[in-house]
Image (cartoon, rainbow, N blue to C red; front, side, top):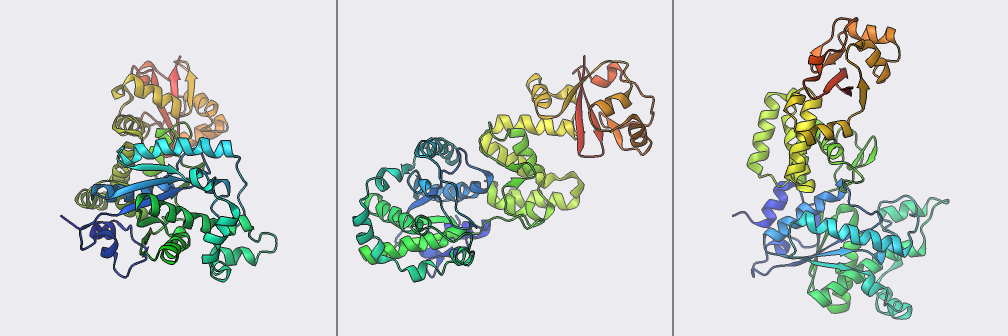
Length: 421
């Protein structure tokens, strides 16, 4: 069986670590198991896809027998993590922060697939700290000179209109105190996070060494970036992709992954799924043989949707997506899947015998009848996957495949559903 360090490296989960050798952290020669802590900032009432990688890393540690502490920052969330931010966040009220913390906690348990973890909220202890005690016991161990050398702080300091507040500057101290508290209460000896958290993690490692004379560790993974655009991973043209189905529907969630570019799909399969290396290699091999089929993207979309929303939902959205893109007939969809199709795609009621060019205009696929005729002449219009060549074409009963739905498309991406009335 492969060592955890080898698995983490193979999946691309290793960026920085506080020991000379990664194996010292992940595979101690004594065989002891670590107690790991990962913190989540409850700045929203749902996790988003950019945070999903953390849970895949945590699952690897759990599978290897390590103990996991998930910290939801109900206390630090009142300030907001300034790491990587070019301006101060708007402060949330305590009720909002605690509500967010509760929702994120529930999502986190589901993602980790186990009840065998410790779930804590740092408002429990940070809310009890006395200011003078904090400055004496924590503040004296930190140098302002060192704090302001962090890249994001230096960038903020040169911006006259922005700067950085004392509250934000104190965030690293609060996070270090969290690590110390978990070390004392739970024996926590490893904090993990994205590479933007390295400075905060090291602050905790150093603080415990100075205050307790003990060695603890830190480990980060590289932040995901869309290689095709160079932009931060986790957003689409419509905005943030959330894990809460009420904020981002499972269908839109699936489409986000399905639209992954070829340059990034291999990395996402490794970092964002539980598929084995052999399964990933097989998917990528088949993808290279026939890129137009986007098999690797389909594998990715199904795997992540199944992980987040469950296998039954993943099957349904995959079937609906296949119907929209001409890979499956509507008559093959279940009643529930047809309802999903109507809910997720723009749907327009039409009458049998109506001219197709009227439906093109009414649905917004064409701005005028003249343009609709031009699209048909150019071969850009398909109905249920078949190219439309007759500008006088009318809608017939057989077009609706007993659904009573039909798929009308202009090109590959402009799609509407017609519903016979």
